[in-house]
Length: 345
Image (cartoon, rainbow, N blue to C red):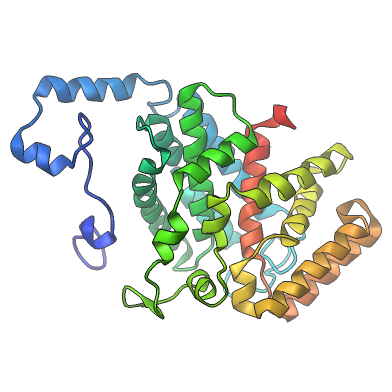
């Protein structure tokens, strides 16, 4: 039910029909035809409940959800984050502060385990078959976020990227495969295979009668694939740049906070961030990248000069209305993979 507009069906949300627990066909067909007996249905339910992690609070599903909750909160409170909301600054945002993000994080706390459970219970041969269920869960999560923030978008991009990786980790755990950042990211890519082409295939100024998102506009004008492309390529900005930077800074003795800021700076140097492009175009992107490169070159959060450079970046980005929100989302993903796979680093 939609509390504002009355009953909302799955078709109106662009969601596929519910699938039968027994055979995987559209559930409505099996119900109408009384295809399966009570015994078959009960056996299918029993199989689901017998899977380790199938019950809330048990097994790897719970651990994945807890790790995701930590990652979201850790990213929220890390500081300083140039142009972004942190405990000491609103950055380039006049409509939100740290408490807005904490309220959203609290509302989203249960959803990460749900994403993980969907992956853990998925029994199909093709990981891409899980995507419709993840999108359905993502729509519910977005509604929870907007309800908690009064309509402010704090975590929409992160719901997509972290939701995929929670499901990926759950799927891998169910198979007993050793988990690493690369394996998790690669499985995430398999889940969203073809998403960019499908989602952007028919854009012509408006999509479904609505204004285009920033990501859609820049795909049409410049071929920018944004977070969809990042996910479809296996999160290379995270596994190749953000995570190595974070772990390198930790190995040098920096605190987790300072290592996260270094990871954020590293991500800013490579991420094609539609938030930045929307606010400042290619010139804004140049400003962000050049300043992030300089801050890292002078030592990042491990040096006095680097810390001063980061402080100056925050003032510059705020004046220029630049907010690297895409990099911030990928920082949370970086922290998630770091916490989930500590032995690999």
